[in-house]
Image (cartoon, rainbow, N blue to C red; front, side, top):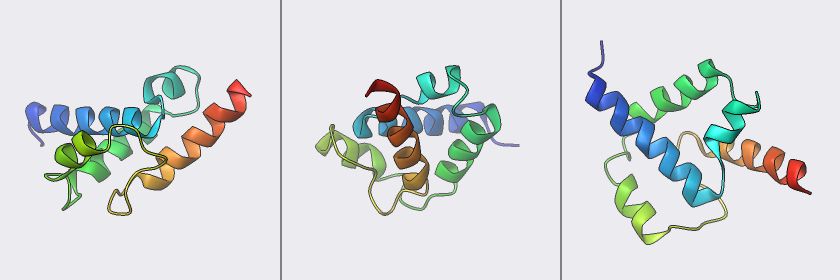
Length: 90
């Protein structure tokens, strides 16, 4: 079973990548656009990402980007949620 600290690290990475890409993960969840299972899957994918250790540095250098980097296993999920959020706003 994964340690809580390890889970929290990847939860924070997912939330930060959401901020960097302009994707509000919490809002998506609250509006029913992202299920608890989907959110957990995003964290699980982040945990398995070989690039996760470099992710914080990348986000530090790229605080406001159009999309997640190609190396991010959640890039398609961030993009899909961002499209939905943009449609809701516009």
